[in-house]
Image (cartoon, rainbow, N blue to C red):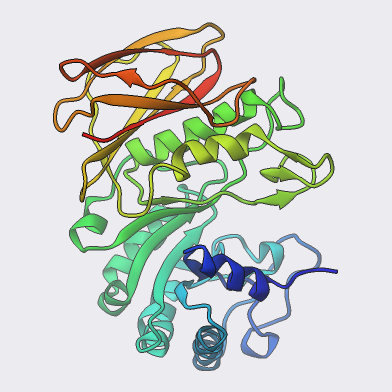
Length: 342
C-alpha cells in the first residue's frame, strides 16, 4: 500500500530532517474559482478571496503536524504564484503575495514556530518582481524568513546582499535538471554532472543557503531513484557529494585562482572544529590534475569520496597535505569531495 506523506515526515524527523510545507491547491471555498483543468494554466487562474480562512487553515495544519511529532520548519506562501494556476496552484500578483504574507499568513503563523517562505516563483526570471514587492511591504518583509525560488529555466546569477543583511536565508526549493542527449535515462554521469554544476553555481554565484531537488522517487528521468528501473541514479550520488559532507551549519568559504578548464570547485568549513570539505567537479573526458592550497587551518590529510562511472561516493586513500598543499587527480567525468580535519 501507499505510505502517507505524514508518515514519511514522521520517519524523516527521526533522522534529523527539517520538514517544511508548500501549499498548492487552496481550498476552493477560499478562491475565486476551482483549480484550472488538468495540470495546465487557465484564464483567469484561481485567486485567493478568503485569506483569513486560508491563513487559519494553514496555522491549524502546522499545529496538527506538531502534535503528531512533526514540527514544520517553514510554510511557503504559495507554490509558483506566477504560474497562472499551473498544476492546481493559486495565482498571486507580486503585490498580492506581499499583502497575503504581511497581513494574513504572517500574523496567523506568528506563534506556531513555523517560519514563512516566499515567493517560490517558477524561476529567477519571476523572482525579482516578487522579491521587490516583499521588500516594499514592511509587514511582509518582517514576517518572511526565507526567500526562495524554483529553478526551471533560470537560476540565480548573483547574491542578494539585502537577504543576508536582514538575517534571512536564500533558498532554491525545486528543480529537476533532467536528462541529457547522451544520457536519456538520466541515470549516468552526464546528467549527474549537470546537476552537480547547477548546485555548484547556485552556491558560488547566488550564495544560496539551501538546494532542493524534485524529486527523490519517480519513474523516468526525474527521480533520483528511478522507480521504473529500480536504479539509484548517479544524480543521487552526486547530491551526496554535497549533502553527506556539507552539513547544516557549515559555511562556504571563498576560493581563488583559476581551476583547470572543465573543473569547478567549491569549499566549505564547519566553524566549531574547522573541518573542511572541498567539492571538485571534473566534466572533462580525461583525468585532470589539480593542486589545492588551504590557507588556514589546513588538515594533515584529505580523504576523497568519488562519484564517477565506476564509483558511488567511493572512499579513496587519504592524501597527505604538506605545508598546506596537496595535488589531486580527478577521475574523468566525476564529482569528488575531499574531507579533512586540521
